[in-house]
Length: 365
Image 1 (tube, rainbow, N blue to C red):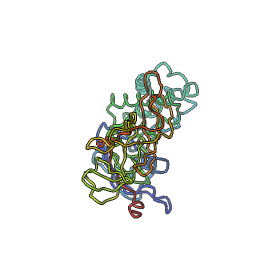
Image 2 (cartoon, one colour):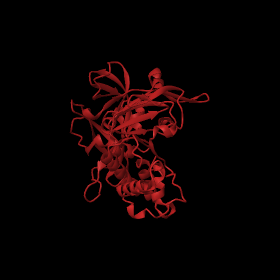
Image 3 (cartoon, rainbow, N blue to C red):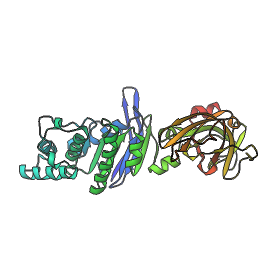
């Protein structure tokens, strides 16, 4: 449906977008995820026609819309700041984008959209009389009222408190699926991106680092940046010593690194929740096996986080690296007695991923 081809943008001498290419299918919900300054909002502004790219093109259903003004594109846009007219009623705000229709059809459509977002009984009120979550629902209803071919969401939930944010993100996703409208959302919140999206586009320094489903990005991050930005991950500098084996410090680990050549440096990544902690038994062998890497570790700190406890460990066999593990909280929320000075740490081989290293690290190696 939408094809973005080699978009670049520069402000003065500062490159903001570097050859962005992205295809979006009809009905997809895609999140542009990344830190402040990565170029995601600039890309959204280019898509809706507020900004123009230096090079590249945008095609909608095969038609080149790169030079079309924002009004000609007819995209629905929802901003972080709601952008409602304070002197107009809720119904009038929603009807504002329907000025090509007569008054009666405008009102009918506005009330239909307010009913869709659960605010039909608030139609007579003014924005200042509504909560932040309600105002954002009005902004969403206004954006959807003209039946746009594409919905663009610019950090739509960041101004709301945590509890309202969780409820509204589920509501937006429900509406998007119910209407089947193709949607692109800009966010810096990984939880929003993972919970709402069919695919997530992770951006970094004006480029796309990785595109994939939430599950793909979490299970198989392609780079150190993606691994650190989407969830938490332990990173271990390593050297490939054989097929699916790498050395960290003086310790060889079995891992899932089939695509990396023997002798090449890489980063190994392991999610904290994948690590299994057990009581240490001095009589139990610690040699790595084909499925598990069993190592002794020293407990440095435990931090209670509600559903889990974060355990920081130092492993001498891995060159003194500090590893973070997550231990599920028990029914009585008490830590086991064996979680004291030393524990047995199991690193499942199937959960250890090989990550691309930054160019600077490769040069140093």
